[in-house]
Image 1 (tube, helix red, strand yellow):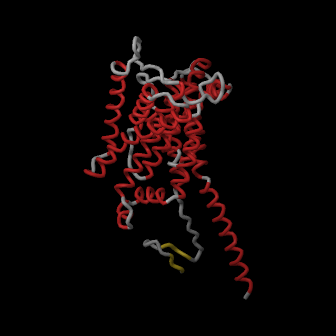
Image 2 (image 1 turned 120 degrees about the vertical axis):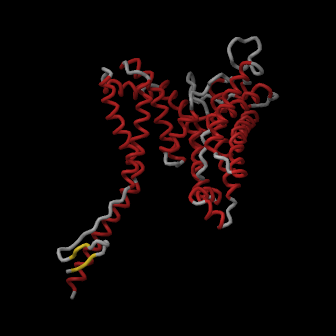
Length: 381
């Protein structure tokens, strides 16, 4: 009588081991799918690089060395990663609540405008007073700009994709006009504003480089948003609204208020990115100062699976591609436009490999004396 029990115990133990191994595989599946997607993208990119007559090994070596091979390259990678990181963090909040904020580019411009106005017209204060005030101004400028499409969505159900996208043009073209006429540097010829006060500039972290304290703001923001989304009631409500707004409404969650808060936070982080570009890099408002950080950050947030801590890694990857592209073009003769193709391949393969890892293949073991009927049930003969 003991033999069947021992046999079943051994079988159960194997099943438990298999389940534990499978849970570990799926625990790391986002990370595995991310690196698998990058590997496949680089393999296909090698074929394209060979097709244009360049050496793939030389091209990728130049790409990596250009981004990380020197102090200047590494710090430039961090400088480029800062606006992507801050903007991607904000988009994580909006997308978690299923509000599709496509207007981060315009919100970056509003944050930059507020920083410039504070830097020019704010009375002189010490940096420990001026910088927090400027940061708050950039945050609220971007947040209020994002709150408009949020309010339109709540009040009249206006599609936020269209409104945020159209508001990008208003912000970008409006600021281009501002640096040509009302904010143009007195006596200057270029479309740019006057320099901001030194007390408003972000401190440089490494001498003789452009690395500023905005990167610390991004890392701290990632930690704060991770805690907000995972440990607080507001984070729980944001995720419930994103998963099922009707269920959230029936459980007493003020859905409209949560959507508005998510949009303000999303635009606020984009505004901080604009503040970092002006107070840390350019020190004045320029025409077209952003090369499309708001649009690239959408990809960053999606590839990070809307997880704030993962945004740090993904923003570094895209910044390395931006910085290393020039070196790759100069050393290996690869066209700069090919880097855009590599970025697109990374997005496609990472998303594709993630879907592959998330597919569940049901296994059914059938004994010799069992047969599966047409309705899917087992019949023992």
